[in-house]
Length: 635
Picture (spheres, rainbow, N blue to C red):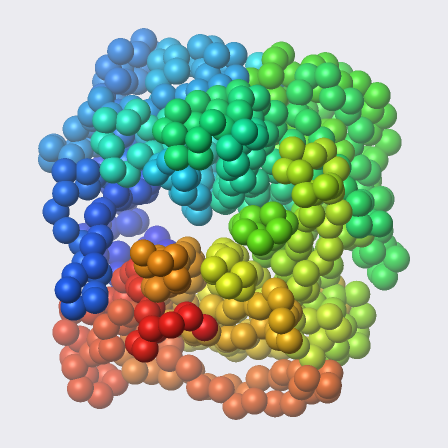
C-alpha cells in the first residue's frame, strides 16, 4: 500500500507490515534508510528453461544499485554528515563504496562546487522510472520524481538552494539535489563497470530514453520530462558512432547538445539548443492558455509557466529556484526576453542542471506529461506518449497543441487524457533541428470526438511488425469510478461536465494493455490485449525476441496492485456507470469489481468473505511474460 499509517484502512490488513515489516508511521533514519535502500534497481539474471519458462538464476552479476549505494564516502565529508554512513546494524545497512560518478558538463562545472565536498562522486540512484537499452549491452535508467526526496531548486551556479527538511531522505543522509534527476548508465553483465550519470542529457524528471544509433553518424537520444508542462528532448552527440555495438559508445554521452522541442500550432517544430548563447523568449501564459480562455474566459492555474527566479525581477524573492509567471503577472516576461541563457546561468553545466526551467526560458513547448518516447524502426519517426493534458503546479501544457480540459458541455466533446503524438525529422535526419508533428491518437472514450478509446497512455513498445504497444497509467483513485480505501466511494461521472474532468477516467476500468497497427487495413485501430489487476499500473512492455528475431515473449510489470485498498477479501464494489456509445450517445453499464487484490495469487482469505485471514497473500508487484502458445507472429 502507498498509505503511511492509512487511517481509512484501520482494522484491515495492508501490505506495509506484511511485506516490509515496518511501522511506516514511525519517521526515523532507520525507516527512511529502508525506504532509500528499497529504491533504485535490482539486477537479476533470468534464463529460459527447457520447459519454456523463465526463472531467476544465481549469478555473480546479480546485485542492487540503490539510493544509498556509496554511502560510506560520507565519512570523508566535513559539513556535518561525516558520521552518516549507515542506517542500521545489518551488513547491507552499512555504507559501502559503490558510489556512482558523473560525466559531462555538470560533472566539471557544478559538482566540484557541491556542498557535500565529494566532487564528482555521487551517492546512489533512485526514483527510477523507464529507461532504455543500448546496442552495446548497457541500460540507461531514468531518475524521475527525485523532488520528493532531495532538493530540486538550484542557484545560478547549478548547486542546490539548500537542504529542505520536507525532502527527508536528502536531509537525513546529506544527498545534494543537483546530483539526482539524471539518466544513469549501468552494465547489467559487468559489475566492474562504474555506474554513471550522464549530465549532458540534462537534469529533469526523466521518464525514458530511446536511441538512434547508426554507424558513421552522431548518437541521438530522445527523452521525456514527466511533469505537467514538461518538455520533449533530444540529445545529439559531438562524436560519431564507429560500430553500434562498441562499448566505447558510452563516451558519446559525455559531450553533445541537448535540445528541447518547440511544437508550433501549424504542425511544424524546432529543436532549441540549451547552450549559453541561445536567446531567451518564453511563451506567454495568454498564448498557451488560448483554448481555455476562448472556451471559458479563464484558465486553470492561470496558464502558469515556471522560469528561473533571479533577483531584480519584480516579485522575485531570491536568486535561485523557480518563479511563476501566469495571467496575473504576465508583464514581468519583459525581464526574461531578449537575453541569453548565459545571462541567467553561470555556465553550461548549470544550464543542464536546471534544464526544465531553462527550456521554458528559451520558448520550448510545455507539454502534456511525456511518459515515453520510442523510435519506429521502419521510418525513424518518433512516437511520444503524452499521458495527461491537465495543467498542474509545475506548468500548463500548451493548449494550442494539447487538449487541456473538456471545453464543451456536449457529452461527446473531446477529452483531455493525453494521446500519442508523432514527430518526423526533416529529411528523416535525426540530427535535424526542424521537424513536423501530428497527433497520432487522441485519448478519450471511443464515442468522444477524436477519441481513440484509451486514457493516460504511459509506456510504449514497438514490435517487429511495426505495431505500437501501449499501457495506461490512470490514477488508481478513479478506477471504475470508485475511490480507493475501504469504502470505495463512488465518484460522480457526468459527461456534461466541463473543465477538468478526471472522474471520466472511471469509464475505462483498470489500467490495461493495447496495441495499434501503424500500417495496413487496421492502421490506427486500438486493439485491447490485457487487463490489469485492481488498483495497479501496468508498465514496461518489452519484447524478448528469439534467435530469428521474432517477438516471442512480451514482458509486463504490474506495479502496486491493490494500491491504497484492503487486501483482497472477496468484497465486490458495484455501481451503474455512465458511458459513451460509439455514436457519441450515452448508455449506462452495470459494473461489479473487486475492492482489493491478491495479485499474483488468486486468494487472500480462507473460505468466504469475512473468513479468517491466512496472512500470506498480500498483493505484490510482479513481472510477467506472455508467450503465444502456438508460436508464429505474436499478434
